Image (cartoon, rainbow, N blue to C red; front, side):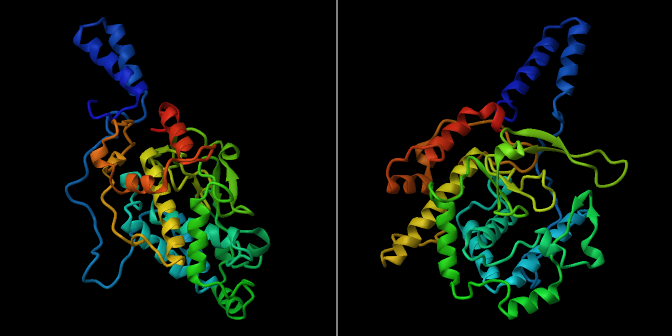
Length: 370
């Protein structure tokens, strides 16, 4: 309780129960308080310490890195689709690797720390290459007219009730790419595409609207609004059980940053991003955009890949829901992000400005954040 692991409404119910127990209230009062306590989503066991021992695939001395997947068939189709996008153009892979390496160095690539997963950054890159570059570098593999070209048995199934159709004929994709039939833009360098990518997610006008828009790779144009998706306030949802007879897992969905899963369209890939997390991510995109422009003029002020200090103000946790705790700012811990803000000068105003977005998030603590 003292560490802020519960939301304000939850704390009220818990304190009421504790007070009723300590004061020796009547049985009917105790039963009512206990009923309210148990009505909270998994309140008695959702906050737990990390396990002492966990399954960890070795990172060194093996020569191979991988993710281990248990009973998640959708993830197999996600991986297959990413491989097909990689085959569409030789520039996809180096762009994805660059952005993932940059995000790790800048400490904005950890869902457990309230920022974004690697998969989220991959979808951001694909969104840019499919929907923002003109002409597109990659086609939208999920569009119906493209998906219908592939009538292989594995491409017509529903998995966990989700449509997993996309153009997955790898032989045809390779042939089309080799013949130059995938994209009309065969000249733009990886460097120029990266510059456009960071610019798109950094600028307030003509770029991505973090406060209002949802990245949707399956959608023509790649953008939906949070209002369209009804992704305007945090909520708890119960996932369908993986196996028959199992209890569905309760998951806290946040929408400060919104990236729709290409197949499981009710799932927000960026649901792990908390208030301080989105502030850190946006700061890093603005920093990268500034440094890239400085490098173009021959005067970069610092290394784009300089390793950032640990972002201690993201309310670190291992498992469970994010605590609703926002301690007062400590200037001694402001670190790299505040230095960048000072270098940029005062924040601008507007509905999608950093100041406005942060203010909206802070003001909506009880309904838009966990």
